[in-house]
Length: 50
Image 1 (cartoon, helix red, strand yellow):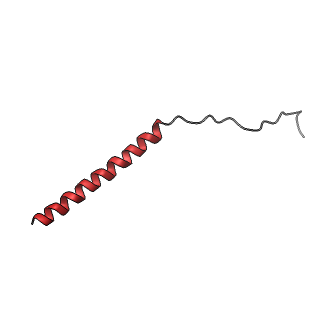
Image 2 (cartoon, one colour; image 1 turned 60 degrees about the horizontal axis):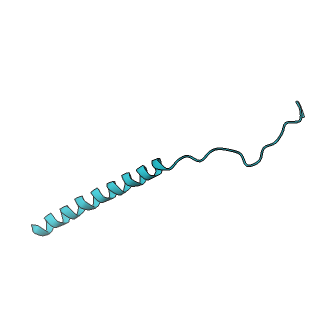
Image 3 (cartoon, rainbow, N blue to C red; image 1 turned 90 degrees about the vertical axis):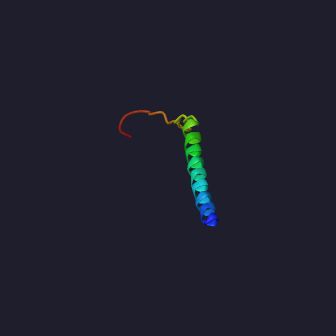
């Protein structure tokens, strides 16, 4: 019976660790600032209807 209890405890601890790691990754991704969406190349418009 103690082996079954140890296996169940291992499963519970492993799942708690996986959930904690997933929440940590999500928190880290939310903490990084968004990059500005500025174009590298801009074209000047010479006129209408080209």
